[in-house]
Image (cartoon, rainbow, N blue to C red; front, side, top):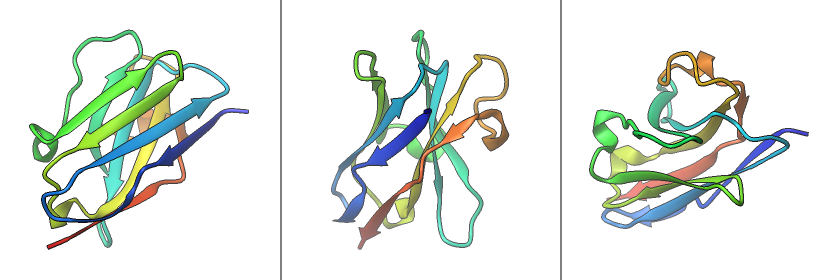
Length: 123
């Protein structure tokens, strides 16, 4: 059974940090990404990593503070977030795509999703 399970979310004060994890089971995917959805807003792309390696594009608001990485042996992807801001408050979702083709930034290009993990940043 294919499954993505996120963990690591929580409530932190501005300036703090969190490390989100996404443990995949059932198969290896070509692309893993993090999206987030704030209340009343659409789900937006945050970062992507390809299993074979290479560049790791980030959305502009994530550059410099977010780092995506993977543990090949554990089939797990991480999102390290530093200097958290109140505007980072959202549910963070892990997504995985079977193929390398397609847009990295569209929710429609991912085949599996996790249940989401809440990140709340207070000022």
